[in-house]
Length: 273
Image 1 (cartoon, rainbow, N blue to C red):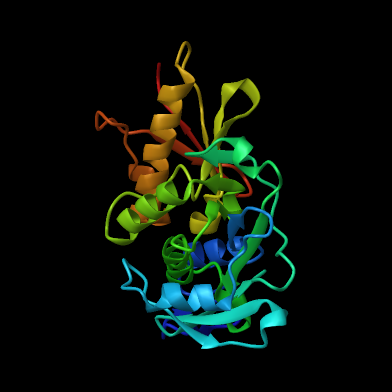
Image 2: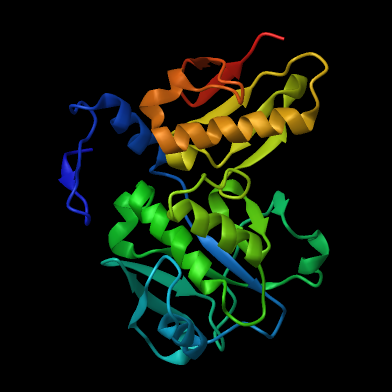
């Protein structure tokens, strides 16, 4: 990848540039599909006018406007936020948008999607394809999701990179807190599951760092306690930056041991029992 300037006026250095660690993150996240999905009861999807009404409301974190409005039956809009454009598809009276398979639920029960909901899908615009995984672009995407959570009849919000689905209030509060300088919503924008040998592993962290974490278990440790520590580790890494992975600590301030796998796609984290 050659050196290029993104829409934020920042220089992205390609492979072989001055910051190989940052290059590695960009290269590994470039193939991730970055999208927010908004789920509604069948026959209750909003239309372009509903989105325009939300855009006219006072914004909590992310002000946006409708920058292109094609014919209604096309079912999509282009919206503008902080100089960047995003596309929202699946609007009525067009056909619903396809949504990714969901594995992790936060703040809601699976019954909310029975019968199967109809979705809208929000993605970075075509001009952002090369930079759709850059953190400023992702932060705006999350902020737009929080603003659009005010659409009438919304049942749930999905974050595609983590295959997660959240209650609207849960998504709004956690994302708005993060964008205002609070903790990263590790249970939502990422997710956790138990893998082989009870190792706690993340899903969706790769979007922000270029790798996932594997938290090694301690004998007799409760899954809830391991999940709390994994969430803490994820927050520290996202907030401090990937260059600080060697400095992560537990809640008592004790240093954790970390080691990348050979291909640097996973970061192993462990402690003494």
